[in-house]
Length: 162
Image (cartoon, rainbow, N blue to C red; front, side, top):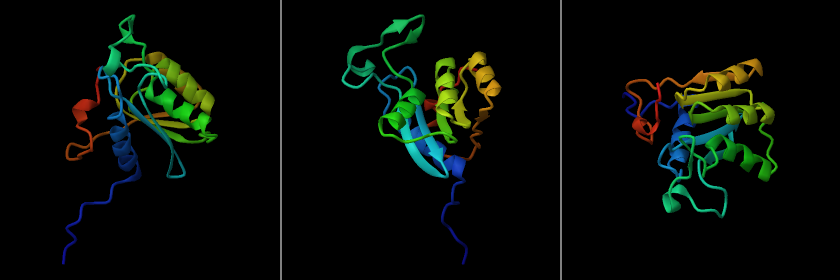
């Protein structure tokens, strides 16, 4: 009798699916971004973009725009790293899964946190971030969504700025 159960996802697919689910918690609809830090196939921490704790979120007070960017929120990568620090969890040597390629500020935080690899889904046009990660020896890999793969979040939620 043939096995009719769905194929077991590979680790990258499994973690990217969770990252897309985390992005749904975002409180800034301009870009719903999620991040996940993993080490030894164990989830260490998650983060999504949103205002600092106790402050109003974009979905409550609107965007705070400066230079074409909403600055009310912390980025998902920043929140994932901050959560690790807040709870005393070392992310050194870990892998970060993120719905969007990190910006330069996040790239610098990733480098200093000791994260060794970043797997991202959506492109973000920041060549400096790519250069910094490369110079620091942090592997940067774009997650290839196969045409037949379904994820918990619609792929249109992953913004592509290409």
